[in-house]
Image 1 (cartoon, rainbow, N blue to C red):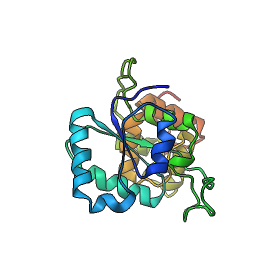
Image 2 (image 1 turned 180 degrees about the vertical axis):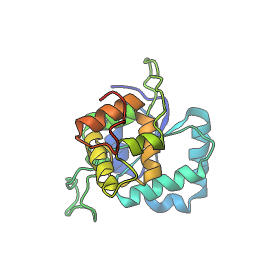
Image 3 (image 1 turned 90 degrees about the vertical axis):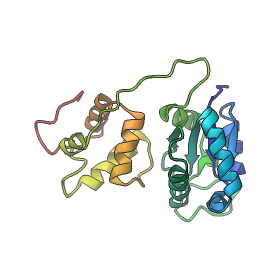
Length: 208
């Protein structure tokens, strides 16, 4: 089982159990929305982050994004990496009914999916060299690829996110941040082509 250097932050104990079965890591729970009012827990997460770095791994529903964005805002200046699970429809075995949005949370993900999400976020796997990625996807690239600036850009962004196995609930700015955190410019041009996304301009260039 792979070992992760950073502290992994999840929402609850079932998520913690799922992650602990996928990797060896120190895992901290937010207690769901409890983190909004739990100053002591937030300070603990901050101190751990300052020492080891953090990987935030929350569900891909609206609640998960609220918690993720709250932590991101409160932990400014700390080495925080964002890991995203894909949007997968379904219901966890322990639940009688699906969640409000009908998506599986972290606890419902297969081990391989969790490991892949951590790798794409840039988590440090002990004994491996950290891969240095060229983060140069720009707003101009998004326009050339048809991912902004046209009437169907929103649909194209969702199509690319589905192809990449990322949650569709991302704002345009967060979309760019996530692409730069996980992929190189060439990889995004290649993925857009493979996802059959039509560019805005015939001058769009990249590894197509």
